[in-house]
Length: 145
Image (tube, rainbow, N blue to C red; front, side, top):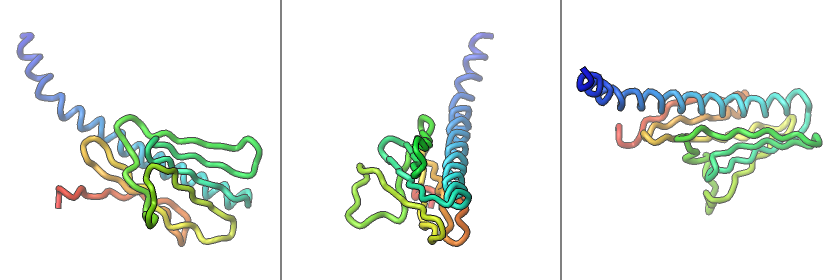
C-alpha cells in the first residue's frame, strides 16, 4: 500500500511542480501589469511625474514620485526573474537598474518587461504607448520553435 502511494506521489510530483511554476509566472505577470497600471493612474490622476526603477538582478520594481514619502515596491516571487527590459539600451548594462520616467501629458514610454522562470516559460508585459495600458503576452521559448 505504501509503495503504491509512493509511486503515485513520484509520478505526480513533476506535474504538480510545473503547475505551481505556471501559477507563479501568471501571478507575477499580472502583478507587474497591475503595478505599471498603478503608475500610469498616478501620473494621470495626480498630474505628477513618476519614476519607475527596474532592478533586473534583484527582481524588483520601484515607483517614486515628488510626493514626500511616496514609494511603491514590487518584488517578484521565487523562481520568476526579469529576463530583460525592452527596448534594450545600446551599450546598456543589465547589472544597473533601468529607470523610466512617466510625465503627465507626455507620450507613454513603449517599454516591455520580459519575465522568465525555472522551466524556461516567458511572459512579456508591454506598456502600450498609445493607450498607456499594460498588456501581458505569452512568449514561446526559442527551443519550442
